[in-house]
Image 1 (cartoon, rainbow, N blue to C red):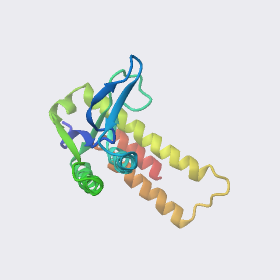
Image 2 (cartoon, one colour):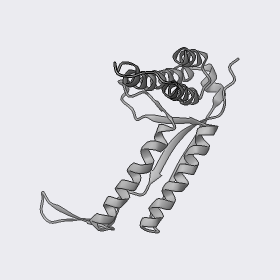
Image 3 (cartoon, rainbow, N blue to C red):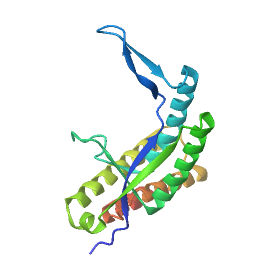
Length: 190
């Protein structure tokens, strides 16, 4: 029996720069006027803040299905307990940054726990494991390609240490502790 740690679906919610004070006012059949709550400069600050925090938060997760999938539904973002703690800290930082712009702004994350026993028994486990494998291989080969395929690259001790650090980061993505993923990471480490 596979022991599976607690897995969560993550949804990040941050204040939008496009918040309006009142509904759109129709000027004509083809034109509407929108009255934003904040002036353009503040909206740009909000958007920059969202970009600064949201991407790195979602990078802590495993996306299902992977980007190359032809699935017709929205993606799920999954994390384990350790990743959840990191995401919660980043959400606190994002919330503070948004509140610096305006006190009515904020950020939060919802974590919906998945039934670990069902994940371990069913097809969802295989699909999540496949998503992890894709992300591991995609990140590994992008980094390796940029470092190793460069003819001018000399694998110094520092470069080797960074590649080992990268494999440690890849190992953290193995939230289901899948043996195939662990074997691939060990192979990359060699």
